[in-house]
Length: 225
Length: 104
Image 1: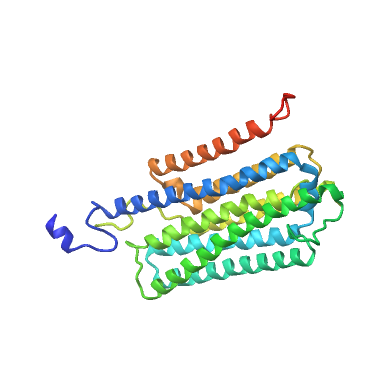
Image 2 (image 1 turned 90 degrees about the horizontal axis):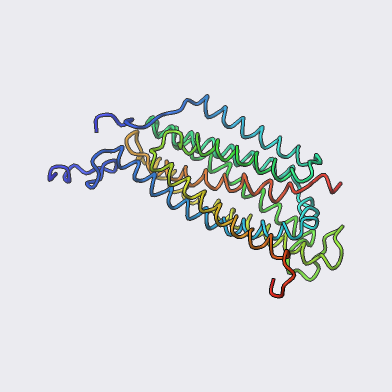
C-alpha cells in the first residue's frame, strides 16, 4: 500500500481500491446531498398542497394569470440544458476533452436563457401589481375578501420559483468553474467526477422545475377563459 | 486501473435524443391537457405526466438505470421520506374540519 500512496491520482485516491469504487462513492455522496435537497423543497411543496387544497378556486384564477406558453417554452429550454449536460458527462466518459467544454458552454447558455426568461416573468408580475404585500395588489376575477388568498398563491409562486432560480444561479457558477477546469484539460475518461456530480445536481434542479411548472402554471386552466 | 470504463455504461447519443424528445412532447401534452375539463383528474394527470418525466430524467440522465443497488435504495428512501412528509401533513390538514370541536 505504500507505493499506492506515492502514485495517488485524481481518479484514484489512496483510500479507494479501484477507480470504479471511488466513482460510486462520489455518486452515493452526491445523491445523499440531493435527498436533503428533496426534503428542503419538500417542505415548500407541502405548504403548496395545504393552501391549494384550502383555496382551490382562487389558486386556479391566480395560476391562470401566469403565461403558460412562456412557462412551457422555458421548460423546454431547461430540458434542453439537461440534455447538453448529460452529453457533457458522456464526453467525459469517452475522454473527449473538447466536447466536454462545448457541451458545458451550451448548458450554461440554456441555463442562462432560463433564468433570463424567469426574470422577465417576475418583472411582468411587478407591472401587473401581482406582488404579495404590495399595497396596490389586485388580481382581477377574485372577490375583495379573497385577495389575501391570491396573495398567498403569489407568495408561494415567488418563494418556490425564487428558490429554484437560486439553485440555477449556483449551477451556473459551478458550470463556469467546470468550464475553466475542462479548458485546462483537467478531465479525462478516468476522471470526470466533477462533471458527473454537477450533472446530477443540474438534473435534480430540472426535476424540481418539472413539478413546479404544472403545479404553478397549469391549475384548472379550463375554469378561466 | 486497467479499464477506465469498468462499471461505467455509456449510453448512445440516440438514446439521449429520444429521451429529450419524449420530455419535450410530455411538456407540450401537459400544457395542452390543462385546458381540458377533467374535473378532479386534472391534477392527477398533471402530476402523472410530471412523474413520468422525473423517472425518465432519473433513469437516463442521472444514470440510475446503471447505478449500484445502494444508490437506488438511497433514492427510493428519499422519495419515501418525501411521501411521509406530504401524506402525514395532509392527514392533519385535510381532516381538521371533520369534528366540530374547538381548536380544530
